[in-house]
Length: 122
Image (cartoon, rainbow, N blue to C red; front, side):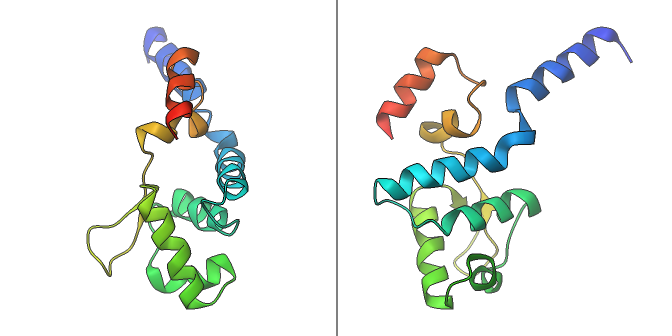
């Protein structure tokens, strides 16, 4: 493989820093919880969806450790914040990274000035 291509791949890997994404998801949810916006159990659901690619709604109570009703409420809040998306009202959910939150999840992706602007809007 071309050295330039390998360098580009390594550069992109460093920008996304996927090795620590679980910690960044946890940190983001902790911040949102302190501000009264999301429940702490949201982190388990978001982390699971990130790892699996999608999660079926029937799995949410198990993932969050809460009742089905509470798990649905947690999922709805994550959807309201644009962090989870679904093709329909009963289908599985997938992770989504809204631009106003992207600096929390991928801090090296944007220059610091843009990141600061995005963080001030959230």
